[in-house]
Amino acid sequence: MDKTNVSESVFDSFLESDEFSDAGLAIFDNDGQVISYNEAFGNLLDLDPQKIIGINILEYLNIPISAIKKIGKAKSLTKNIAISNKYLHAGFCGVFCKDDSNRYMLLLNDKTAEQGMIDNLSSSLEHIKRLIDKFNLGFVILDDNHNILEANKTFCDNLGYTQDEIVKLNAKDYIADFQARIITQKIEENKPFYFGDDNRHTKKNGKEIPVKGYGSVTRINNTRISICLYENISDQVESYQRLETSEMMLKNFISNSSDLIMVLNKASEIVYLSPNTGKVFGYTENLPRAEILDKYLPNNMDDFRKFIKKNLTKRESVEEFEYTIRTKNNKIKYYSVRTSTISVKEKLIICYIRDVTKDKKYIEELKILSYTDQLTKLHNRQYMEEQLLELRKTENFPISIISADLDGLKEVNDSLGHQAGDELLRRFANILRDSHTKYEEIFRIGGDEFLIIATNTSDQAAIRLIKKIDQRIAKHNSSPSSSLKISASVGYSSSDKITVSLTSMLAQADKEMYRIKNTKKRLNNNTNGDLL
Image 1: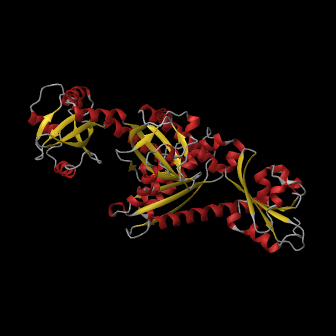
Image 2: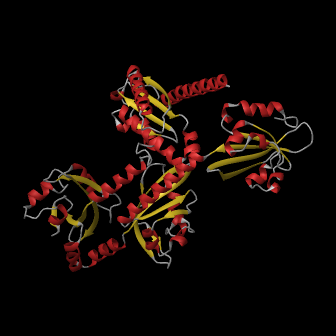
Image 3: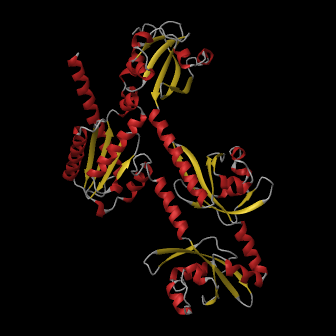
């Protein structure tokens, strides 16, 4: 390759750098003609090496020459390009030359795997939104500037907007008293938060509606987003207001309500139970008050008494008290308690008790979805990172971290298509399941990256586990029916000291895995050279 117009030391340093070993590099002139390039450049663009020199790379990539000429020596330009079933990230910059002629450098990186993960995430979000719709909850995703990125039909219907209209809004367009709330609310990433019962939304017609909402802030591709769930509680609020003003309406409401009403005095003695108590708790026989107290109500719990005392002076509780009971058929049911206070001859506390078993199961389903890689059904990186914090306990040691990376996934995707690549990932995931009995300790953490955090596993046990994985790979590859061959590079790190950092063990396992992977590459390259 001709480098006479390019600083050889600078260009050679890029070519020899490990950081850019998989990146495509090329130098082109002021008209877009390619002057020099590396091997990866031609491979990424699927171009014949004999035809690259002299090709107008700007026309090939549909980049205006005017945009390149604005770069100069101190600026750069980046662009995402879809070409040959690949997603490439292109970076352009000016380079210094021995003469006064203009030269530019193009750096290409393959982002196909990352795009596939984004597509899988989009599919998962659609599934989650359909699940949420079944529970008549509003679902919305906001970016870090509070602009709406996604919303489901329930959320749109509650506010009176179409889905095309809703994505043009900012949170301040529908959250009443937005500025006051956004200043006072401190939100931590990956921790659920509750909006409070006094949260109100402004509809398209200007009318405000009360909502109950939960949310979480997380990151996707290093972009911070907020995922929020809202329930329109207009009916509940209106019902509670009527309860305060009309005893007759109170009796009518509680007879048909899904909430059980329990009224306590200041001594925490029960002075009233609503007639729907049996319906809420699921019994049909007439039970004496003492038996109801013992089997179904939390009145004898110390934590509940503390909850009542805390909310005794409040008009309505902000927090909820949750407790469980075990039914006759040995199933667990979940109930939540909220309170409000009224003053008649004395101050009374009204407790609204609701069966939230379905809500609990629904939240658990969402949690499982958020922790699961949809392609392989293994746990994902988010769950793995949480486990790194949870597993540092004496009873889990010795502990071993095994890092595995599929070899040649890109080549399978390029030659056989992404469906074949996906199938290869699923088969390798099954091999890991067959090799390690503790399914919850296996993770897919990236495109072709897998991890096992094996508790109570010594150094020797980790070696035996890796051998087991190798044996199952060999068995798979020797099967006449196996058209997709599997090769994986596996490294590990073990420790019996609880003081060790699991993060540093992970880094050590990755380092060992990459050492093995690079050794394989060198051996393959030497073998290919001998054949030539």
